Amino acid sequence: MFSPTPPPSNLNIREWIEKDRLYFSPDDPESFLTMIERIISTNGEVDLLGFGEALHGSEELLNFRNRIFQYLVRHHGYSAIAIESSFPRSRLVNEYIHRERYRTYEEIKTTGFSHGFGASHANRDLVEWMRDYNADPLHGIKLRFYGCDSPTEMTHTDSPRMLLTFVLDYLTSVDPEIGLSFKSRVEPLLMQDSLWENPDAMMDPTRSLGSSPKAGALRLETEELITELTMRRPELTEKSGFAKYQEALFYAGLARQLLTYHAGLAMDRKDRVSRLLGMRDAMIADILTFIVSAEKNRGKVFVHAHNSHLKYGVSKWQLGPHLLSWWSAGSHLKVLIGSKYQIIGTGVGRSESHGIGEPEQETLEHLLSNGRESSCIIPTYQGVWHHEKYTENMPIRSGSKINSTYFPFTHQSINEFDWLMFFDRLG
View (cartoon, rainbow, N blue to C red):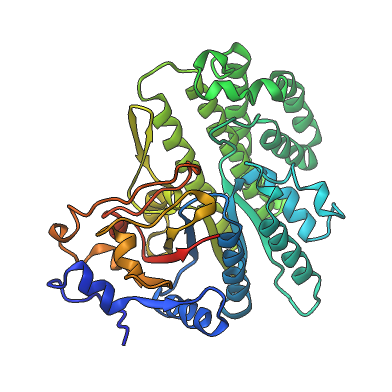
């Protein structure tokens, strides 16, 4: 019988796994129901539930995510999903599912997503399901789609145009004279989007616009824009409503962070990449905190992104000879939201299509599989019960030869997630 309280501290890791592991089959409705209800029944009052992924590119994992979200919407009051895609671009997808602007998915397939995620069949299925759900007049609370990622990624960083245009349009709608004045100063400084989004800038600071005179002037204008919005809060809120005002102010703040990120791209320093990764995760946390606030009176939020973003603690990445480390978005969320945020981390046993073989003996994946061809979940209690001596020498399984986004579990995973969900095999 599963207990929501931590097991005795004298249990070793094998005994803990044997005591609290629940096997399930992703394709079996009954075991799926048992699994998801166990999670929901023990995670308390959560406003933001995270579903991490061990790797990018698995349609099977994304389809499973869709099933979880649909169940949470129907049975547990969830009103929104956020995926690891650009926050400003996701507005286009949200307009599509509300039938406000676009008529076909093809119109937002590229522009509404970053990282190429719009090409995913599972992401398309998710969006179309949300669109159909919202069209049903019996559903009073309409679903919202968000991207939770900063407007950055490993291959390029977005131009600040989309963020600043949104803010300028808002200000112009409530005060045409001041709005147009800001537009006349800001738009000449934006330059061509392709120059901001140069993929070579990630590894070569000399290819970045971040330290150019125009970029510096744009940062100052963005500060002035934020000041204008802030000091006129009572007036602007009365004219537009608080929600629209707050959204415009958040977009302006995110534009400031993005311009700071571009400035970081232009810096030549030893910790340059680590700082950029840390800035990205801090932005993800701020975005998710804003989303939770926006959904406060509507429902709960389900977020799906890579384990390395959503977990608690420090994220690490081996880039050539350099071991990079930075605070994950989940660590920031633990400070910003506290126990209202909880996270399910996923692990993989085998996947031929992703170049992942059998987990080695004594690795966490091996212990979770227990030689059975079955998936399972287990609560971690964030490691509050276990002694470091039981896990400090635990080996880490080998990674993938073809999918660089696959990160195996480590002994620290017990501290980094509220639940571990293990898939014995992924296609």
